Length: 139
Length: 61
Image 1 (tube, each protein chain N blue to C red):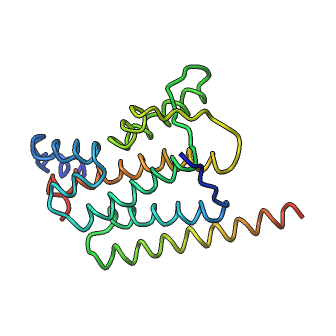
Image 2: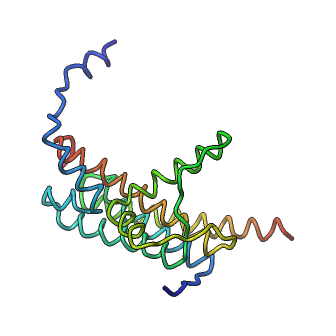
């Protein structure tokens, strides 16, 4: 009860204060931190996520597409698709430029697929960090 | 586009490196804490990689 009361008293940051930065952080990895003038962190995030995505492409990883089927198939494919999509411009540019690698057996292809999804998931972490900075919860 | 061929070890080390950098940056509040946490995470990744690698090798006989 006491916890609920203290949570209720914390004012929420207005959406206009953090939404542009979070959207930019999604679209351009490191862009949100750059907008908030955290240049060093922005550069490290941009380089790390972009390199991870590029390594995934060079290893010929496959992109997930939403597929229906049993529960596990739905979870894997929709989850993987959201992970890929979280890379923002990297995913969109690769798709628009015609990158379409079929799922092939082999450890290098597998690592490539995981690198592509992980780049997106790391960008989600960066987006959460941007939200916390923009909302004043973190410096 | 040429296909890059990496071994399991090389790919896992790269994965550990990028993941440690980003998680170190977003997890802590000061720069020194971020560096220390990033290095700690990278060490944990590498130790797990080597440990699990040996476990699988020994398990296969």
